[in-house]
Length: 120
Image 1 (cartoon, rainbow, N blue to C red):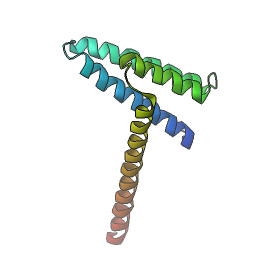
Image 2 (image 1 turned 180 degrees about the horizontal axis):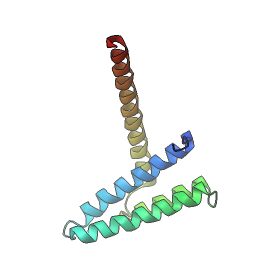
Image 3 (image 1 turned 90 degrees about the vertical axis):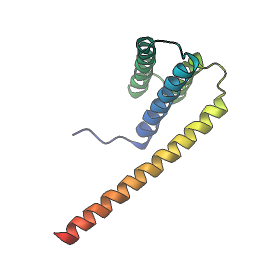
Image 4 (image 1 turned 45 degrees about the vertical axis):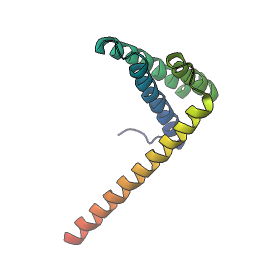
């Protein structure tokens, strides 16, 4: 079994995941004529860069602030017009949606377990 992730690790992981979603959307939107292979290579390159930054942070080689700056730098490489405050607002919305989805899944699981116990 994997060790439980701290809230900080979860939040940072979601930040990295969100950044990758933004990069994927922007790469596709800003390069509509690019081949599927080129898009995949580009996205894989950014994904590997982000994973490396997360690893550096997890190993305490860089600070959380440095991680955020580097990851946002990758996002800005793809879309230089994206403003930090817009990115931050979109991330907050993403986190809120994630929390709601997680809460709904937990409630559904609890209800299913309660029904199973009532029937058993």
